[in-house]
Every structure is written in C-alpha cells, then in structure tokens.
Picture 1 (cartoon, rainbow, N blue to C red):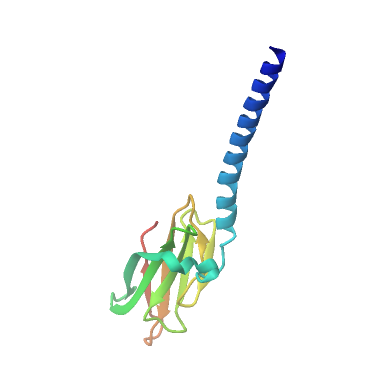
Picture 2: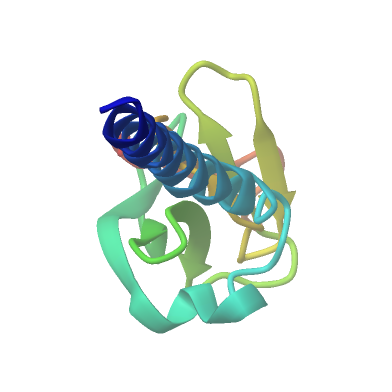
Length: 145
C-alpha cells in the first residue's frame, strides 16, 4: 500500500513538473526571441519571408497638401512577430520610423526601418521625405497594428 502511494506521488510529481516545464519553455523563449529582433534588419532570420503589408499610405506635403507617388508602409512578420516600415518611391533623403504606440521604442532608417518586437504591442510607421521647395516635405503616418 505504501509502495503504491509512493509511485502515485512520484507520477503526479513528474506530471506537475512536466506541466510546469512545458509552460515555462513554451512561454518564455518566444518573447525573448522576439525582443532579440529589435533593431535588426527585416532580412535577419528571414523575417521578410512571410511579411505582409498591413498599411500603405500615400505621403502628402504637410502645409499645402500636395500628394506624391511616395508611400509609407507598415509591414508585419507573423513568424517573427515583428513590424517595420518602408517608403516606396523614396530616395536617400527619406527617413522612416517604426514607433511603438506607447512610445517606449523607436527605430529609424532611410527608406527601410529596422524591426521592432510587436508581440503584445501595437506599432505604427512615420515617413518623411524632403522635397525641392524650401522647407517643405512629404509626410505619412500609418495606422497602428
């Protein structure tokens, strides 16, 4: 009788230990791995491989409202759980930023931003391209995702 209780206790202890280990292992690495993508290019670990465009917004001149053929885009990788921004039809003077909605992180680039961990957060993208007229520039901001 005492021996069967001992076996049952060992089995339940092993089961509880296994369940706890499963929760810890399945929960922690995903977040830790995703945060390691912060500031990396979208090509890192082929995050760009499953990327999809979430928002694509035509950039406009802020003061006069002139429309341009430039677009600012927010892209998302489901596999990497990261977001980043890019400017379509931009040039070397253009800047794009991916910004966490709570403003705790921001990454900037020229026409292509580095990635930001988007797991459990929302982010948006801001684009800026100076134009020939003095003091004017095209701007664009995506929705948040």
